Amino acid sequence: MKENRIRKNAEFRRVYRKGKSFSNRLLVLYVYKNYILKDINRIGISVSKKVGKSVVRSRVKRLIGESYRLNSSNLKKGHDFVIIARTACNGKRYSDIEDSIKNLFNKAGLVIYDEKNIT
Image 1 (cartoon, helix red, strand yellow):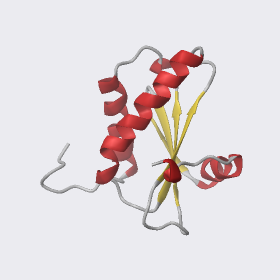
Image 2 (tube, rainbow, N blue to C red):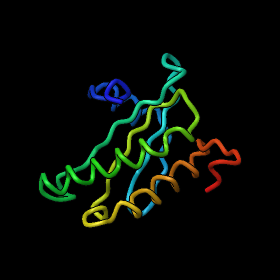
Image 3 (cartoon, rainbow, N blue to C red):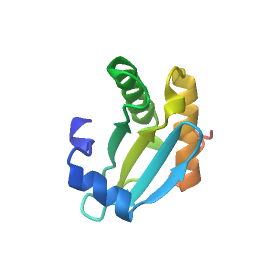
């Protein structure tokens, strides 16, 4: 999973600049079609200091990462995602974050539907 992360500032900037954004109350999702790595998705997670102190920010990052990991098999391949946590994420449960992420991927039209994963 670590090799599927967006880490460099230039990669984040490219997704922000050229990607399309979708948002809800808890999160903002930027999506950019990756024409080089067509068979994998990469994710970057950004949590501002406005969300809380380091313990809170780390927890939010872990919740977002775990929710993405468990739902990534249902997504179309070949995209870069940047997920930005809003201040409302502070104190939310895992189920709230997961519902928010599923909602954003549905808005973006990236969910692959079959008999197993109808949400």
